[in-house]
Every structure is written in C-alpha cells, then in structure tokens.
Length: 174
Image (cartoon, rainbow, N blue to C red; front, side, top):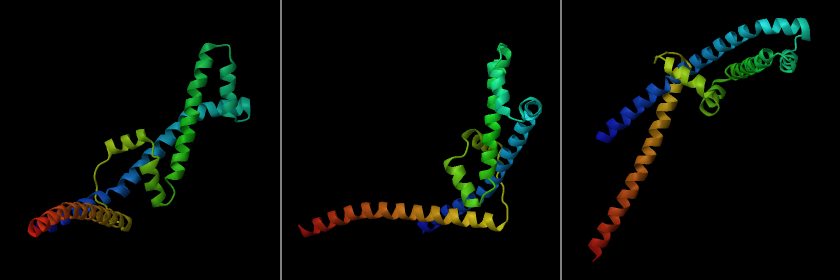
C-alpha cells in the first residue's frame, strides 16, 4: 500500500515538474530576445559609423580601431568586437529558440547558455499553465519519472530478494 502511494506521489511530482518546462522555455526565449534587442541597440551607433565609412562592414570598423595609433581606439576595438560577438551569439540562440519544442528543449538541456539559464532560473516563477503542450509535458515527464523509479526499485528488490531467496533455499536444503 505504501508503494502505491509512493508511486502516486512520484507521478504527481513528475507532473508538477513537467508542467514547468514550457514556461521555463518561454521565459528563456523572452530573455534571449530582450538581450538581443539590447545588444542591437548598443551596436546602432557603430553600425551608422560603419555604414558611413566602411560600407556597413562592422568588422572593417573593428580593424580600423585595432590599427589606430590611439591606444583608446585600440582598446575600443576589443570592446566593439565583444559587442559584435555577443549580438551574433544571441541571434543564433534566438533562431534555435524559434524552432520546434523538442529542439528547444534539447538545446536548453545540452547546449543552453549557462549564464542565460542561470538568470532565467533565478527570475523564474513557478506557474501552472493549461495549454495542450503543458499538459503533454507534464504527463510525459511524470510517466518517464515513474517508469524510471519503478525500474530502479524493481531492480533493487530483485537483487536484494534473490540474495535472500538463495540463502533461504540453501538453509532449507542442509
């Protein structure tokens, strides 16, 4: 009887965890898009300069800064390069997060940016959304967690049970 309640509790836990996944993915996507907009806003002035003097080529502007005799300009070259790299990264991240749900989830699990994940998790507020994909996530995680726990428990019981069964059989055969 206790095992049945434990199974139900584990299923409920999996359900509650699973329904958080779509909300977390949405929050991460929103964070990426917001930071991308901010990054592009920060590059606007440099883009105008690059458009005016270097046919819109930001990397040519960076090269010009790097080759300058002015140490301030050379220092700004690395800062500008960092802004360009960050913007490119955020564009790639935003593109991935526009894909199908399974690619989004896999990306966050395997290759999500650790800093963005940490910021999203720290700002995340648990929520219960009632949408078909949320229900599917909840049930899916609950079933997987339940099956995993059931399998591990059965393996442990069979390992422990076999040992005692053998000892019992040996004891009775003497």
